[in-house]
Length: 241
Image (tube, rainbow, N blue to C red; front, top):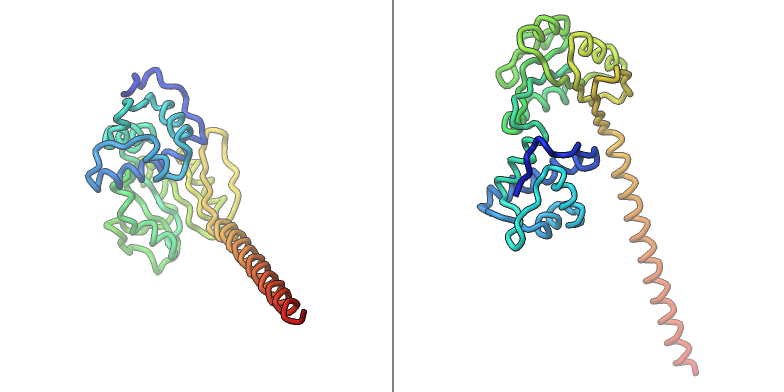
């Protein structure tokens, strides 16, 4: 059951961060032919508490039906609307190295409401190369390209040293949302949103957790060895006596 969108409260940032995972899980359930899902089943699949899930979805005005749960396709549509994925979002990628090429080649953008409209790189060897139907152009053509088909989201996949200048030029033409893959902190006006994806930082965090597991396993092995040694000592003592 859904409330009138006009009376929905502002959705907290923490809830927004969880909505894509809810949507991903609901999309998988829909592909499997599942028609409805309880809050307990959905929360377990996502990895959050059921109370947290119900609270998150209440911000959308969605409360489910007692004894039935949530209609999978209906809830997926509500979340898509809340995230703005029912609209068409033109995206430009700046920096067509390995990462830029990988992003431009990702077919999932189309099904998620994003449309790659421009690819930029100043490397002469890349000029004119076509990726998924879009030709790579020099970055100086940004204003012309933006005026022809306004860019909603700019993706920065350049080296760190170029990221701020690229960001400044995107902001200058009117791009208000930027996804930054460069390992650099960007300075932007208050009305511009920047999301930073630092792959090296994520790998370092994973390395920390991997190290903790190794240390924990080592500790368990040490305890096991100590217990085995104690057992042998106790046996030897009993035999000696």
